[in-house]
Length: 621
Image (cartoon, rainbow, N blue to C red; front, side, top):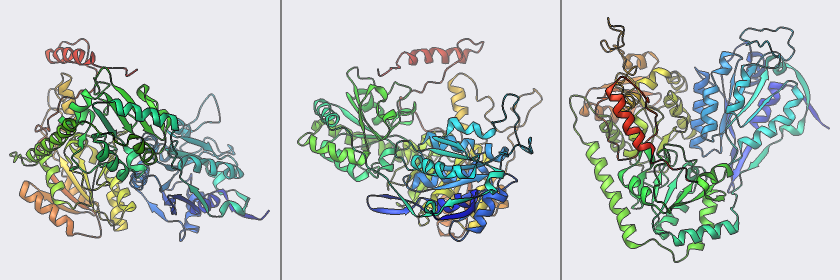
């Protein structure tokens, strides 16, 4: 057998560089390169290997280990999970910084390869710098924390173990059903050890992504259920995007008349002006989607995991005769809500289900009602876009200006705070990849790193990152990476002097926004003094971005137009918004427990409302 003598880290990089994926005849490299921050735990191993193979496998320098994973998640999400990055770190704090990113990847079913440096397998040096010791075992490090947030985890204690571990890791990374974070812990001494690897390990490998089909009898039962329904609704999730099922879904709903409501991950499954698109569903849903979901006698979930925001804490679907059909590549999700499971690829399943419904269509009055609700919602969006709120802009108006002045082929990106709910309701999605929200884990700090990832995935696309001041302060370091790489991303920083989303939630549970405003501590010991004088524009400017301040509607419109003309690096637009001017809710409920006893009247009132709503929850069993 022909062999090649390499260090473990060199073999790792060589292997990653020759992995490809193929679906529907289209083939591409699976790894776009590797992010990495170096320390004593990986500089002589992975760092040396990346330098050696730099022409063939690109290295990207991030500023924060969590951020590099978040950028990779965004990249892979935008590329429909058909490509991703590897992410390397040193041991200890560098490794544990990636834990949140790993959770984001796994919760959202997005493939990312995480390569944390680890303590010496040899153990002579222990405890090494940044090692967490245990009195109970020598065989543990902070990297064991990745186990619950990884879909596959391994520690490479001998260089030859890589031969078995890498294909196992690739199987998970490329699996439509099992994908998520994959973690290979790399002891720093083993990274530098050499081994005679079989040369066949480094031959190009193509991983074919299947379009799995559901059981034939289950398809027929699903068709029977649909034919017998009077008010069916489709809940479109991220699986519509990942399977590239947009055209199949459009054909399906046009022929059957079944309306569609979209989750955060599924928004853009249909374009906003499709007459059968009810828009956002669940807690942050539109008025029409909430009404139709409440009355539906059949719910067809496509590629959704039914988070509590999607099903409004089990209150969204209230028809006593209601049943579920779930189309999902993951059996785990397909069986949720005691559903009839169609375990398979979303596009393939819709294509096979539609012929079984030949001649079926919803009643004309139901279809007309859905169209009317679609038009009524568009009028409500227009109203919020044009509030002309004073003295500061409202958040809805900022969203409206960005949506109206950006091009139809652009992408908006956000993750946490009050903006995701407003965007879910208000953003008019004009292309299937025009809306990118990380809301499976609702990760503050995802936004700027995520914008970088989307731009790397699709360099010709204009990306508009919308981030609140709270999320911005948590992680804005990848502005520097954008400057370094000459990457243009438009970043709108909305300054509302605190955490507006949790401030509103605090009021809803009877408190008064406690701990959610950016204020000085006053003489009474509380954080209720003057507003902190944070200058976000100067902050962005110091990192190398082109910065524009916008104080009112006219200035913001001009700033957006100017941003469109700038190339070669990030553009940050900073504007102040009124946190008190909220986009309304439209009748959905979210279960956030309220204190059962309190000396505060507002809390007691909130508890009474909570108990009334709690009685509406349904097990869907």
